[in-house]
Length: 447
Image 1 (cartoon, rainbow, N blue to C red):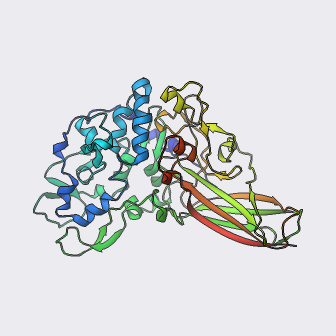
Image 2: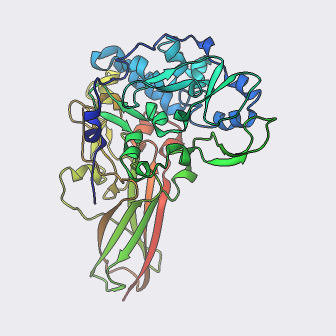
Image 3: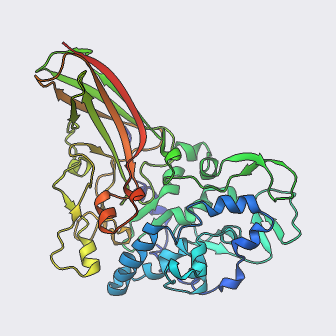
């Protein structure tokens, strides 16, 4: 299986790294009133505005974890450590672009209901004409708000604004402006667009929008004529169970169809990224947890958890759940907590399960969920697009197992945030909910 890391692939393309706020030319350059509100857009584009309002794009600043991460971790850290000071403004370049451009830094918390709450608004995206430099990353957008709105469909007219046909909005580079991120240590802590570009979907020109903004027939404005191929502005992604379902295919093969108690049954699993055009997990890799759980259940309902067999590669311990492993000690550093031992590295993931991750390590080499505090990476053991990883499980069939059929299931799960961090930071339960990405079941017979 080909293993690769985007950071190495793109280093040669960059001239001057943008380390989250290092380029502050746009900060404070455009007041709030240069941008229309979503309510104004809804006067003509009601259906599309409703779709957007329910998306994570609209909630990029108000989403609970984003709010807590910025105000309770990133901002305090930026105010005490010069190395990461740029995140005070830089986080908002993508999460609250109106506030960043208006110079409203730090923005008020969402409870104050400022225009920062609009997140990545309609007028933000439709005012971007391109990006500066060779690689889209760290909000290096070129922003030109005004009476001319950027669109992709030729021949359209509006009685309210001018329309500039700009194919850039239909490109994956448009998404890369915020879905690629280099942190203050020069690490590619977000590289979703770069993963796409260098993978099979990018080579086939299957763009981000083809999966996250699918086309349907409809109207562009509420009183407009029906047209073909209208983009849905729902931006379904990792937070939507229906998007995760089937993204990973799990296959399981027992090497023997019958086995006696006391004998060893070997099962081979194949775990494949079957749907995503980027790595799984991608984006906020430091906080996502994707794992494979295998369990055997006999004819009387007795169940046994099967831990994964070790492969022996460097850094493998990071990829096998361990109930005693601790991590995230830099949360204590950020919050000024003395003798903070950290939190459970793998949370509720059963010990022995295989985890598909790339650990983000702080300057002390400890695993972190503070992407801006990432000085190095551990082994990249994630699922590349249209590639598979093989695992082996050896089950010593207990003497107490009932004779007859034994069902062995293998299920790939994902949580948005590792449960130990979610609990400590008091996040909504949905952030640590285990969502099924793929599952399978086979039957063997105990003689």
